[in-house]
Image 1 (tube, one colour):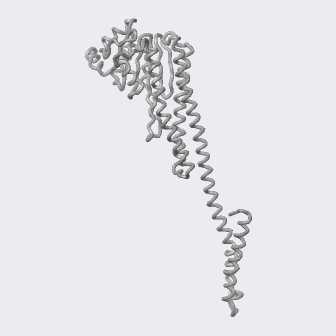
Image 2 (cartoon, rainbow, N blue to C red; image 1 turned 90 degrees about the vertical axis):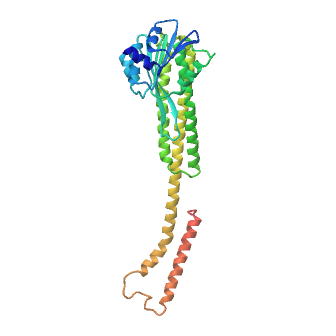
Length: 338
């Protein structure tokens, strides 16, 4: 029964067997893969993409006999990259990224690596461009195949980190557009967008910083039984790439802070202009209110109202209001309050 299950699911798992830089075979049944695993003259790469629980059990437990804790970490969602050392292999968690402009966040895919002396197992729930590109390279006729699992893992990681660039370009374009809209006064919903972009930048830093720590541990030779020393310059290149990405994320963060400050300053200036106009109107209306309130007192025998010339008194009041308003206006103008 197990043989039937293994044969049925083998076609759904990508397997590659190579030696001396040449692809020898691919798409092996898992029974055959278990036999080839003990041949030290060949290297094996098994890629599990959107695999079922039965497939996971068949490959991770039955064929490779990985530690239960490693399998548990592999199947669980890990927000933070990590690396664990086991007897004859290491378990590495990395994150690929695919930024979508219409989304509120980076679309990340966890990629798990089991790296041994003669095997590499990759596990991911969603398609990953770096792995797809590596599969195309290996299957391309005449193309050199990595001679060891650690070199293959490095090349996948190199492609994975290179694929951060489109996300960085998209993020930079969004930031440039936001800055332009703030400076041109078209700042509707700017605050929400700034908060959204700040969250994306923070997420980017949360990915790159621990991944750089993982690469750094590989560089220091902590896993020399699996990662050969001559890969150190290549790993340093990965670390430099992650440092560049992290520096860009820091630049984006500072730019967002500046953009938010400019937006708030412009909003404050706009509010100040409104308050200034309202204050001017209130000040200019004060003489009118003063004079009219005097004539609005509830007194039965009010001066002027019983005089024969009282209509001219009201005309005088109107002229007086106009003169007072004009004087106030000229006073404000002289002191550059307008």
